[in-house]
Image (cartoon, rainbow, N blue to C red; front, side, top):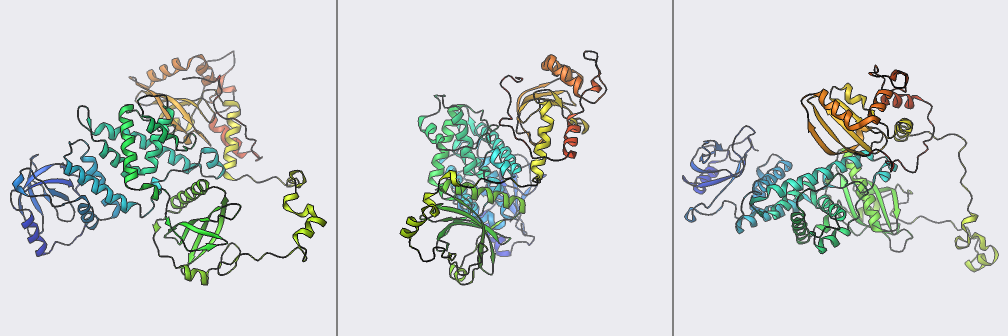
Length: 591
């Protein structure tokens, strides 16, 4: 929004375009206190010298439209009243970018306009306007990487190995939000009984969450319901082409009717194909022309902190693909921290994960710079080996002039192809214990607690101490839980991924019931948990016991889970002995 008033020429043009009696429709208004909403219609009464367009709104309001801040368009209520101020959605987007206070604000306004059209019957010209607006926004958005729209590509175990579990959980949470948004968009797109604007619903979801996440949410749900005949064979085949990270989409369940989801999925695929979205599936842009040790750089992304990542290809190498990080200085790139793999999909996963982590942790944005390959060839000294001009690493001659045939005859055991697995030296354990990093220490502490509490009801002391009510769960990485709020709401369901503590878990609600008070909700929880719940609760908490069990005070039992975790963290640290399976036992408690 500009703080300057429009020029006299601009005011004159506005008065020519919006004479008294012109009908207009509100697209967006930069006023959080206004009761007007997108889609409201009104009639122009006059335009003052500051360019404010005063209207008599059908809702009764007389609020004016501020030039450069509010957005609206002329509508054709009667054929003789003229056409829209924006002939195409592309024109609207171009004007929106120029008059908005920031690119994010422009995208938000465009998304709000699409949302406002969901519940309206769309004539062909309005539908075309929305499609042009969405296409223009999408083509601009793919020019810069938004980490919030990237899906973390690895499962929990791999994320834990890479010490990236927070990014895994953040992505998993967004997956669940995307599923809820899809259900909501389908519901709101019903403009009259049995008629839906599913095309606009798809555009709104892709605008908010991106093609990749929306596609994976749809595919994961169709994969889980492959038996359902209401999904078409074509959509089932399409869904099988997705390699969904294990458990990352368990909470992203769609509740809309399968017939509507099937149609929504088909329209998603059509939009994906028509816009060529497969070319923008990875962050950054395609490159060519630079070669590092035989690897040609085929894709790169660079950030405003002079760092970035690339994918390299060398068809003649044992590992054909590599992902490098680089630092740019004086227009030249130094490459380091390479990850070499055999297949492109694995290189793409590594590349995407590194981009997500770097952009999120460092709070950086992508920049587009023209890279001078000739300058890089002249000046670049690689951090890989310090060799200038991108030359290959000189290899020492260890043959003493002997030919391959002579070596094969005199010392065949020195050739790589003649060495067997049995001849490789065994790995020697270090004489000193390895120091655990923070993630391993937390995991070891969690194992120490769950060693005795797994599949026994325990209380989350932190939840109670914060005055939020009470929460009980069955211990371990996965299990079931009951949560009682102060207002008497009882919530129950499943949780997963409670590492290093229950606060990191993903909760799936199965039941919500409202009681008159906290006490009644607590009584219902005890009845639902049964005898096992009572035994575990009154024999493991460090509060004053309410009952005695087998003649023994509950206060004599083991301390609370919170105290066990703290004690385990203070104890001498030893390498964690990971168990092969941390999930719920088959004979464990069922909800």
